[in-house]
Length: 84
Image (cartoon, rainbow, N blue to C red; front, side, top):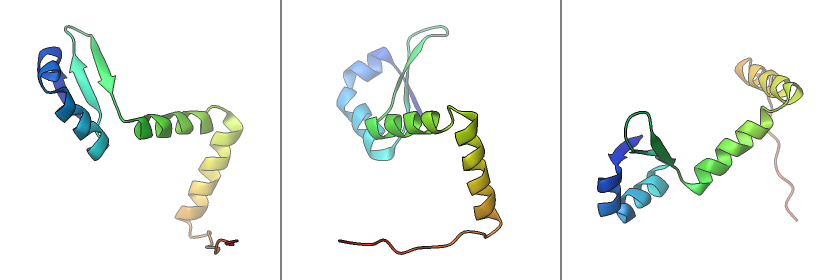
């Protein structure tokens, strides 16, 4: 995670945005006491929204927890994809 001020961000906006995208970093632009802006890549945002959606219902959350437990116990299997 990077932290910068509005002034520094304005001076070097391209470099900051390039780092956010290239390194999957989150940038916080400090705007004063208890105020700020978060900048993240679109890919990171989409991933966050997908995770939020998957955990939005108790049923999905329980299904994901069960799958994680199976992986931890070695109860998973691999399957080849069918290509057309």
